[in-house]
Length: 155
Image 1 (spheres, helix red, strand yellow):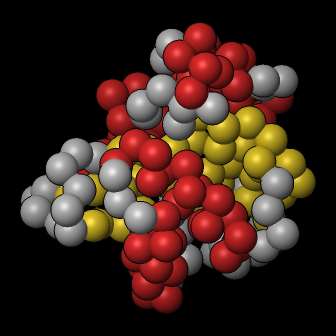
Image 2 (cartoon, helix red, strand yellow; image 1 turned 180 degrees about the vertical axis):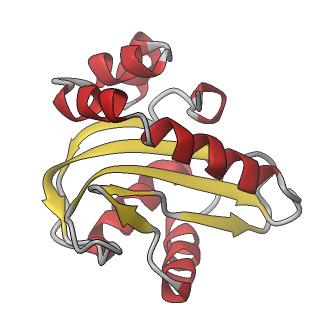
């Protein structure tokens, strides 16, 4: 699971964004709360990573990620989208499930391992369907095995 990467408040339900840049900015704003790094700097890092190739890998799922100087631990934010966003995914599908991963520049191979864990988690079709159907932050948190009350209080 990715529970060790999701601080309280990092599970979001029904996020609305007009497009991919707005989605990245929204995720950056939420992530900034957990890592003490300016949201604009986070958004810039994600945008630079997206310029290398889309992190929308298909099936309505994206895993935007970036490494940031000054970050001292990995942080993830999971969000369901309402409505889905045109993300430029490899399969052309709109994205409705996103996991943002931020990592320290000097983290070595750990971010790659975390991306692999997240990818494996999101290849579980039954879990993905349940995440998409979850009616609330609390339901999402329960599916992920994280403290639902802490997620809701911090959101």
